[in-house]
Image (cartoon, rainbow, N blue to C red; front, side):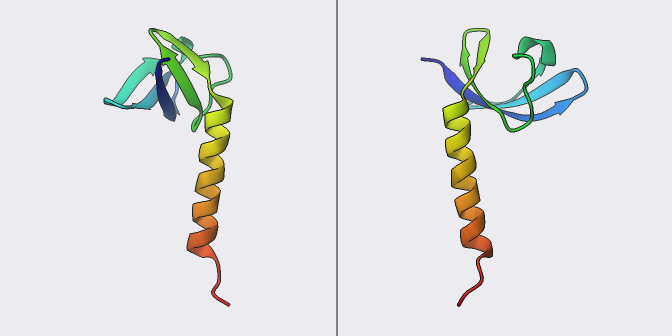
Length: 74
């Protein structure tokens, strides 16, 4: 199994990935078509594939944190 990376942002024809080793810049063409900021990808060698289950898990976790942070005390 490879490394999970997160698309930090897309700048024109380039993408900035957050990896275990830090930030990495790649041409957008190196990623699957339709990749967007915030996407979680599985990297195996030079191949990147979407990881929708991990992306959904992270989004749910972040929403729960937002709810906890911004909830009104009763």
